[in-house]
Image (cartoon, rainbow, N blue to C red; front, side):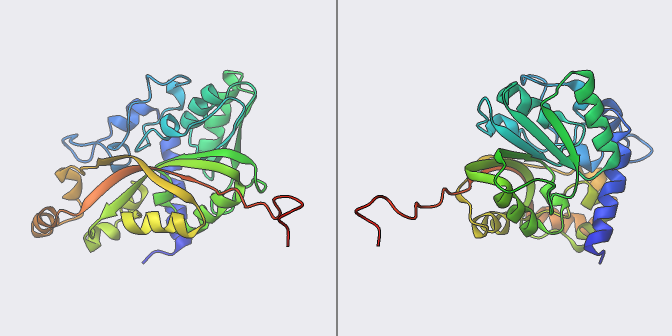
Length: 281
């Protein structure tokens, strides 16, 4: 079983290589000699092209939802994008928060940070900043963000509890997040859970849906809501790289589910210590 650090190194290497490709190259990747299905990491991607603020150069086709579409971003907000990649969601968020707001993207891959910074600079986006760091230990002070977004990233992090604790720390009281992520219902076959490529492709590192939502609540968030849910189907030619014919038949018959969800939650506003001169103890 790989250690947490080994898994992080795997993800960093995989996405560092992806950062050097464009979206078209990613989407035309072959899974075998016959150029059948796409790589696991891009079969979940949704179309951003109709959203205000979309920049094709920043879209590497790596998401599994449209969290910024559901994030209730207001003009002047401070928004943090976790696992910001080449800047796609950060630039969509900038279109919503406007010139009076600020967007901070966090990513731990050198090549992604370099690509995102270049994309921001050539467009003159002076209120979008990209910081290199681990989202389990964000390079951000307490109570900074009005909104946090993330797109298909937390499933790649071994310590998801640590990430939700960090999200709670950096959100302002009353702030909220909208996160698109991959979750499971049922049990993945062992060979899929152990497959390094499937981990980097967001699947084998995913949590059970119920456990994922419980983890959010356990970290103090309220009004936890699923804003969107869709079934992810891994093509058989990709599954066949990891499963025998019998294992594939069993996997299909047990109907284990791979889902993309966009989940919303709020950081509570603490109750006032005293409501006035007549009601203090």
